[in-house]
Structures are given as structure tokens and as C-alpha cells.
Length: 334
Image (cartoon, rainbow, N blue to C red; front, side):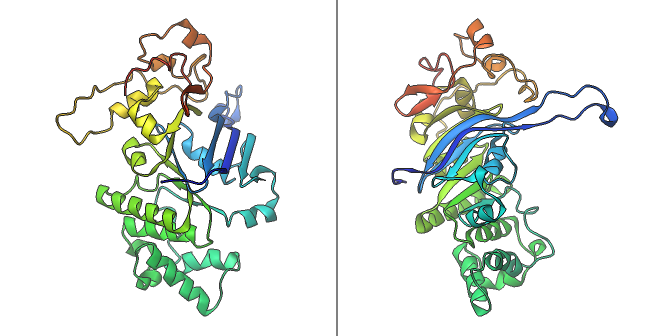
């Protein structure tokens, strides 16, 4: 996919820490805050898809929610087409939300079970005063057709639909207010593999038809490869690698990215790929290790005391490829 020059979304130094609870009944000393997002920066060009990947708990979903202000960030700047999202008041934010929407991971929990599909799609149109009367019904039918559903499903309740059909309704709801930017928060992870491919194809078709910009959040690099123009890899609340998709899959520069890619199945049975199994568990985001946050699990042969004491900067290590590793110029492989 080719995208026009100039970013639609700019995120700079985004921080979200959650205060940890005290001990039993609120007694005892306060614990360290959970650093869900710890200084994340990136840009997404118009019409582009940025894949944001990482293990569960790395903070990627919090990034998406903080961009839309579904959770309030503690610091940083989020700008949509030059508008500072974090500086907006309630009325201005509501108006801006027409331009940015989200598709949630769980198609079972993201729809109100007491609302029909018709009511689910009509509600945002009414809130933003985009349609009324007979036009409202026509818009609902058109949205269902656009996501590959028969307009007859408008009278159904969520429990009468399959998982894939529910997710299509969720996509139609996000599209109803004609947004420019969508946060896709693991939109296919709860679906069967065959349905995943259909939904990914639908998202690609919609992006081309509506000239949409996506932040595609996922933990599966194989899925991200099918849709992303660029990929950012997160670990413990930080981006550790950011590059065009082709460059990252061909020659990853951070050991964590290399280990993730080693787990992606290869369709060619003759292809040989060494599986990298990382030792230990992901450290707690409430107590990240000093130095490089990945160093306790890093398999890089050059790992030394510098890794344990000096946090690596996210820097350019190849043309348009950033990595937060002291030894990114000598990668483990790809």
C-alpha cells in the first residue's frame, strides 16, 4: 500500500502509569506504579497501517486507548491532523471522535446484548446528527452491506450472530461516523482462522475504499505481516523496534523481534528456522529491570554489563529502521 506523505497521527512521549494498590484493606506502604506505557512515540501517515505488536501485557492496547482518550495518559502528546487530542475539552473531543474510532478485540463483549444491530448502528448516527428518519434506516442497511452482511441482520440481537458476524457489526459501528483513523485492537484474535482471513481482507478493502488510516494492534506477527505497512514492536511499555514491514521481517535488529519472528510458522516445509525460546518470564511492569528492559531474557552473545546498567536509546540502525539495542548493528539474524 502506498501512503501519501505527511502524518495523520503523531504520538510523542506517551506515558500511562497505573498506581498500584496498597496491601490488604488499603494498609501498608504504597507499591510502585505499573508502567503500562513508558514513553512511546511514533507517527502514522495518511492511508498507512502501523502494526503495533508484542506479548500480552506489554502496553499496546493501553496505547490505543490513550490515543482515543478512553484512558487518560499521564504525559505525552497525541495529535490527529495537527489537533492536540489531550488538550481538548469534552465538547471538542466529542466532535473529534467522529474522525477516530476503535474496533475492540472481543466481538462478544463489545456489543450491547440488549440492542439490535439496527439500534447499535443507528445510535452513533443519531448522537452525531448524521441521519434521521428514513435516511437512518438506509444508512444502517448500507453499512451492513459494506461489511459483507445482509441488511436483514439489522433486526438481530448479538447472541443470534456468529463471532465473525459480530465483529463485522463492530466494524460497521466504527465506520458509521465516517472516521479517518481506526484503532484496531486485536480485531481478529478471537475469531477462527478462516474467519480471520475474511476480516483482514475486509479491512484492507475498506481502507482502500475509504482511504482509512489504521493502528493495528496484535500479538501475532504473521497476521500483522498481511496488513501492515510499518511495524512497531513493544516490550514492557516501550517500543524496541520500528521499521517498514518488509525490512523488519527480512532483517530484524532487536533480539526480541528476532525471537518473536522465530515463532512464526513458515509455509515451506523445507525452510529451516531456529526456534528461539527466551528464558524466564516477562518482568513485572511495576518493577522493570535496570538498563535494557530486555536484558534478563536477551540471547544476544554480546550482552554485557552495559546492557544491565544503561538503557538503550531507540535509534536509527539502518535506513528508516529504529531499534533500542546497544548491539543492533550486529543482529542475531532474520
